[in-house]
Image 1 (cartoon, rainbow, N blue to C red):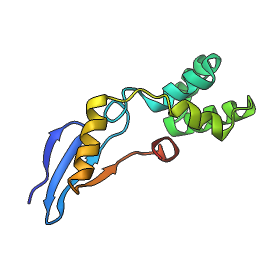
Image 2: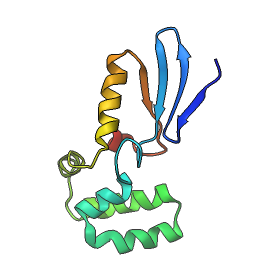
Image 3: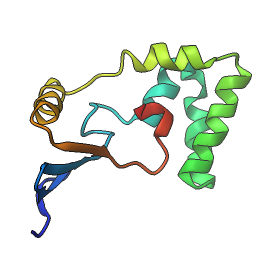
Image 4: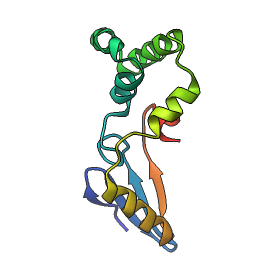
Length: 119
């Protein structure tokens, strides 16, 4: 069957076991841009420097530099984990993902660089 687009954040295609459902992460599953959000949470004083980095580097390179700045500041993996535990989610998306999983659908998140944030 042809894939069908149900929303900007979700596409589905039929299979024998159910549907394959693909989500974006930022502003879809979560109610934030995870990259900016984590910097604002763990290093709000770094936001102007991060914006400057974004104006001169590719975004993923700017994020790498921002992560280095956070680690240089003493931020640890545990700090990221605690901060991400507080990230705002759309309740409807949480409920929907749980229901789709319960129904046996295959769920995937596409991202260009958010592996740690998503896991």
